[in-house]
Image 1 (cartoon, rainbow, N blue to C red):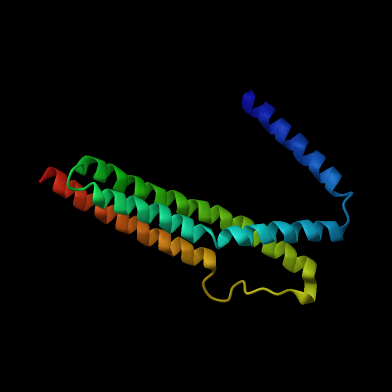
Image 2: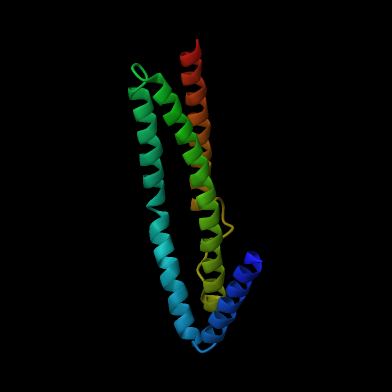
Length: 151
């Protein structure tokens, strides 16, 4: 019953948004799309710094605590592994939104579109590959620390 109420509210809001969006002209929609894309692009180039700072900081902390608090080192390295996986999925969702804006802008730009979509690996994919490497590294560190703990 509760799911039906939530679905009804969602459908009602969606219809309300669609009705009100039809009153906005194409130029305004283009400006809004471009502004959102610009903000996403700005965030995109800050994310690798954030990810590497957080994961690298956790690796450093787990190594620093290794001699005195090996259990904490194992827990922190597990957390860095989980964080790498979570960041990977965050980037997957980010990629969907980012590509949606690119496709919309390309449609609106018509023959004047400027896009490198499909031209090699995207920035988001490269970030995701880095996160896979950090997850593997975190897993190796966790196994090594657990080995030290139990042996």
